Image (cartoon, rainbow, N blue to C red; front, top):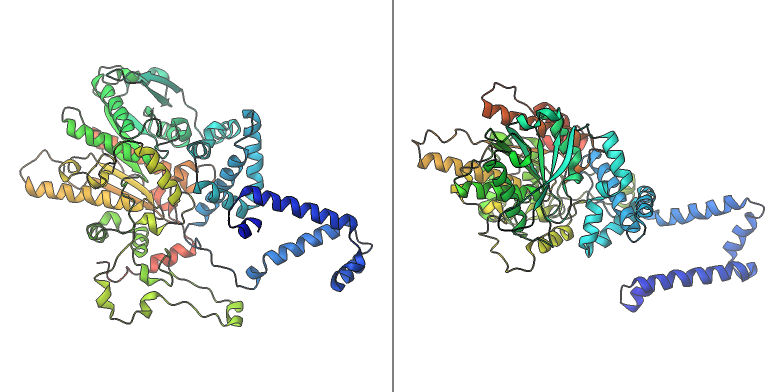
Length: 589
C-alpha cells in the first residue's frame, strides 16, 4: 500500500511495509492489553481461553482465508478469461510449467549450481500449491524479462541435473549414438556444433541414405538440441533414421539472418559431401527431411527457400513444421487478403474439422458478450446469480441497431496473436522480447517483403516448388494464423503454377500440404511429454509423417499414417463437444 500512496511501484517500499507491519504487530502481541481491544475481539478472546495453540492459529488462518475468498463464495468474483480455452490436460500442463518457471526464477540468483538446481525444484513444489502466486510472479518477470531469464525458463529441463536425469530415465528411449560433432563453415565463419541421435546399431549408421535434419526452436534465443531430446529420441527410435540436430548460434549474440545462413551452410555441406561430413559413407545421394518447431520452423522455411533459389542443390524430400513462427509483422488486425484466404481454406478438405471451425469462430468478435472472448458463451445457471438478479450476458451482435448485413460485410478480425493475448505460454511480452532480440541492432527490415524473416510473404514462384509440407499447431496457439495462411499460400501457389504451366509433367500433382490442428492446445506441447499425454501422441504422429515422406520417395505402398494418433489427441470434453455442434459463423464465407 505504501508504494501506492507514494505513487511509485517499488520493491523497497513493499519491503519497508512488510517490516513495519511485522514490528508493529509483534509490539502489539508483546505489550497489547486485552481490555483495550474492541468488545467483539474481547469476546472471541474469552471463548478461546483454554484452546490449544494450534487450534487458535489454524482458526485464525481459516478466517483470513475466508475473508480473502468471500467474493468468490458469493459469486461476485471476476470471471476467468481462460475458462474453457484449453483442454483440461493442457491447462494442467501449463499449471505445472508455470510453477516450474516461478520456482526456477526464484532460485536463479543462488550459487553454487547444485544448490540452485535443488532449490529450483523445492520452490517449484511450493508454487504448485500456491498457483496464483506462481502466475503473478511469472507475469511480473515476463513484463521486463531478460535473455538470462528466458534461457533459465526454457532450458530448465536440460540445465537442471535432476530434471535432465529424470527425463532421460523415464521418457527417452535408449540411443546407440548420442554425440556431438563440429562442422566447419566456409569463409572462416565459426564452426557449427551438431548433435547426432541414432537408435539402431552404430555399424549401420553410415549406410543410411535418408536423414532427419532437425532445426530446433527456442524463440531464436535459447534451447539447444538437448532441450528437445524427448521428441528427437522418439523420432529416431520410431523411424530408425539418423536425426541430425543443429545447434545454431542464438540471438542476441548472433541475430538475423545468421541462424538461417548457418543452417543453410550445414544443409549444403551434407548434400555436397553426400553425408560424409556427418559420418555417413559418402557414397549415396542423401534424402533430407527438414523438421522445425516454433522459431526453428521459421529458420527451416528460410533454408528451404534458399535451397530453391540456389537451383543447384536438391530440395528436401519433405518439410515438417510444428507451431511455426512465420510472420514478424506483429499487427493487430488481419488484412482483407489474409481473412479471405482463411475463408477459402475453410472449404478445403484438409481443414474440414471442428478445430478449424473453432479458429474461424475466434475471428467473429461480435458473436460473444465480450469482444475479447475466444470461446462460445456458455453460462451455467447459478443460484447466486439468481439471488443477486444477475442476467445472462447477450452477444454484441444482438445489441447492434443497424441491420446485420450492413456491418457483416465490413467486419474486421484480429490476428491470433491479439486474439489469444492472454495465452499462458506465449504472452505478448515474450513475443516482443524475442522479436527485438532476433532483429538485433541492424537496419530495420521491411516486414512486408523480407520473406526470410517472414516466410508468409514468400513469392508464389518459390512456394510452388516447396517440398511436401506437413504442419501441426494447437488451435489456441497465438501463432495459429501463420500455419493457416502459409498452408493456404502454398496451395494457391501450386494451383497458380499448374494453371500457368499445364504442360509441365515434371511438376508434382496435388497440393502436397497436410495440416493438423490439436484441439484445446496452444504452443510448445512437444516440451510437455512428462505431463501431457497428447504430446506423446503428437510426437508419434510426427514420426508417422516422417515415415510417410520416406515411403513416398521410395515408391513404397504404405498405410496412411498419423490419423490414429491424432484421433486420440482430440479430446472429448464438454467444451470441445459443444464447439463441434456450433455452425460456422455467419458471414465468414
